[in-house]
Image 1 (cartoon, rainbow, N blue to C red):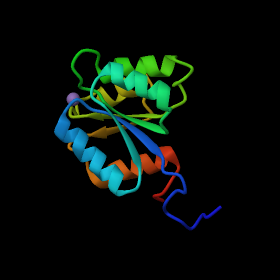
Image 2 (cartoon, protein in one colour):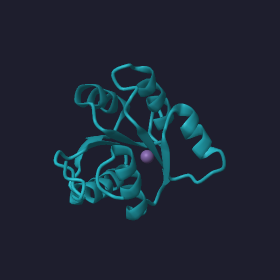
Image 3 (cartoon, protein in one colour):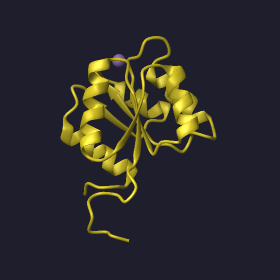
Image 4 (cartoon, helix red, strand yellow):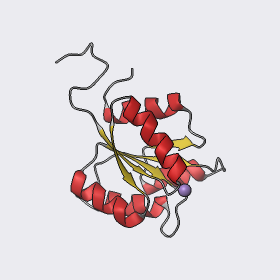
Length: 134
Ligand code: MN
């Protein structure tokens, strides 16, 4: 019970699903620097496996992926009792109308537009892991 600390005693674990290696590296660095533990997935198979096996505290889901897109993976995660309780925040390069609504319909709790602003990313992560931040 150390409410004054801005660092959790046990670091939250974040699964980042992102097919672009540079973006994956960027997000990983931003989160690691804040003390989060990052799990990485570049495709659907890895994303589903890590979500089930590791039970991360939060998933950051790129929507534009080759093959199954992030919305489809999100629906599968939400439908699986083993992973259905994990909050998922969508990452999308497209700020198109209706994009956020589609992500929320698929089961995402939040929505961030790329290029990611570090402040927005950390705020969303803190909110959905209930660690650190405000
Ligand atoms: Mn992508």
